[in-house]
Image 1 (tube, rainbow, N blue to C red):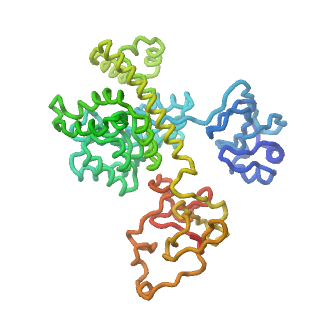
Image 2: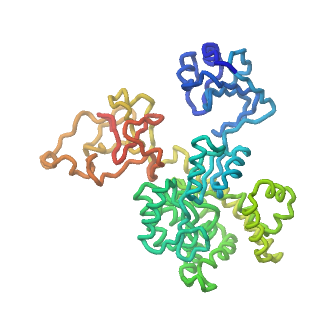
Image 3: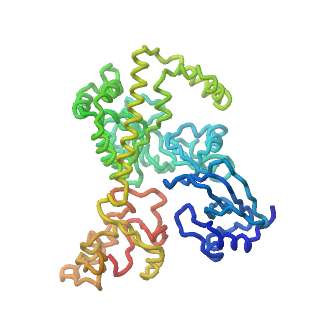
Length: 512
């Protein structure tokens, strides 16, 4: 395919109903606007997808749409159906098919099996994964994907598994002291981990030490909810996600306090059959019978308030609700295993199945009932979190600045964070009361009068001064910490004019 006739293409984009981009920007109302949206280097490789039913992932219903791709970028989405003959543009008819965004698998393992699992994700439409057991091999696979040497999804990679000294996980790093926690967190950061992975068999002091150190270095923790700690306390400690369903029914039972008191009173010796690490899963299967929807709604609200998430991994939960040997009764599953699973991994899995104890009919019925309870809990949490995450339910109303507002204010590239879009009150820097003007618009009129004591204080001494070493950071969302991509230098504009700097917030002069 030769070079694209840009003039004809841009004229068509600007003159049709196309251009309502999936990112929510206004439509391309003119050829000039279309050219501004055209990515650099898009002179070749433009594809138009027509006739598909689009599910765009924004919550709107399915609709017939035409999608224009320029290189690796979605240039326009709209209702146009008639595509003129344009040199260098390939038109693909997707009539009768569905077009969806790339899917994310939020809990995966074994990405280091590079020749199998990364390409298979793409085959099934998964373009992003959260690899929840990182290693040097995992990071090398991700580097190969970024270089284009390997077909695979985008990857968010957790650290090595951190757990207590009596962990049942053979891949875990044992954490015994606070020094172990600090060392493990710093190693995770040096290895490039995006989150710190915690596991089930750690006590409260160990979990707290890992959470504190991770927060200090700018990382979040994620993983299992440790067995002796309620999920509410785990979330309050700063954990970003609760994986699977460990502790979920204990924490949403009407007998919640009783169950955790029993766990705390159990022996702390892994050689004792009554060790809390062994007994927690049995209590979980007892606790789901006293499940409280009200406790689940409170937990869903708490998750939303802390910017945390429940990752229920329902496909995994479904597979473990039946005895492992029954998976071998499915010919299709066995055929897929023999075709795609490496021999060593397949033999390890088969040996694990053979060693699994047999289940009684009562145990089989219990596991299926327990899985139904997990489905209900996941649905109730999602409903509660969805309501809480609506904008009008936030603690303070937030007005995001319009694009270009910072430039009009004279601060090139700087904008306001959500922390600065505060209601009437004191100016964040000068301590002066803001004057109300108009409908809830608060502006600081001129410099505040400083007291004699304040005028004698050297620059940088006041705790709210930008140069003060202990000045608190302003994160983009109240109560949360930033992702690595948000820790960019001041002046690096984000959509909507939001800018976060290391240790200070840039606020346009004269605005509070």
